[in-house]
Length: 324
Image (cartoon, rainbow, N blue to C red; front, side, top):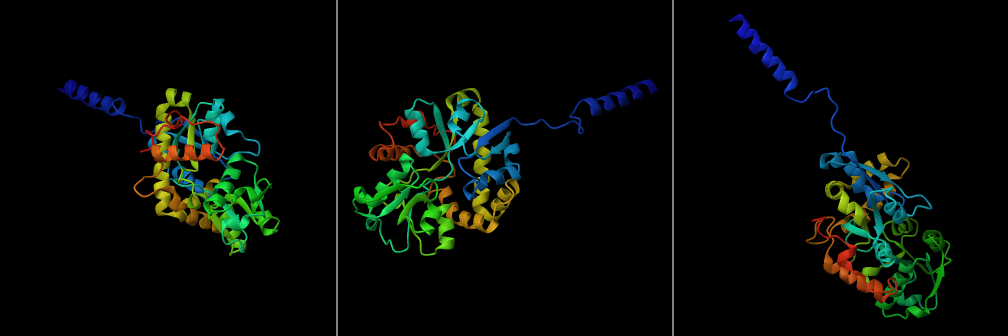
């Protein structure tokens, strides 16, 4: 009897010790998901940092590693070289990359409308008034297309506008009154200018003939989609959750961004968040969704205004099945 009781006790102890997880053992580390931003971190990226701060990435099964671009960073080269798993790209850059034979694929929209605009001096009441005046552009093909589209959409003659290359100095050029207008992003430069010159005019490109295309798109290579589809899907899931939370609590998202990128001005970020948060979604369209009809309209617009030289195969350039 004593031997039987002892045997049962030993069996119970062994089961307790060896039959389950050791609570002291380290948890499995999820695979890293390296994400390259498109621009200096600002409020449009706050949902990414909130996903990190609240560990939505870990819950989805990945560990986000977010990197801001340097002055000479070429996101497309880093993607193709496998030095980043995912990158946020301007949608026009995806089109140009596909045109050049690079097999990058858009998988999720960060915003559901263009961020591009023509910012103008307070006295410029309509884009038509830019005829015969100086308008600054960065030198990128998409900027000149935005300028022409906005002027034409207002009934003006875009050929009569004196486009001058100013690089990425729209704020300085407008404050110094070197130009009557300049192309820029309304969610960053537009916010900065309105804070310093409240009467600044803002002509958003989708208010003047352009379709409501998603300006910023999360992209991967076809090889990554083929070899590591779970990594992409899990990342998309984590980011969607981060942006859903950011839409409900912009202040928390801004604080997460500042924790991840020390030194950013909270008031500026809050102003940016107020401006851009409504663009994270569209009526009847959850965060991240890539709408094929919208993408086709965008590709046609890019072709019409000379950003693309030939029609784009939208189905090959975007995977609309991942973010739903």
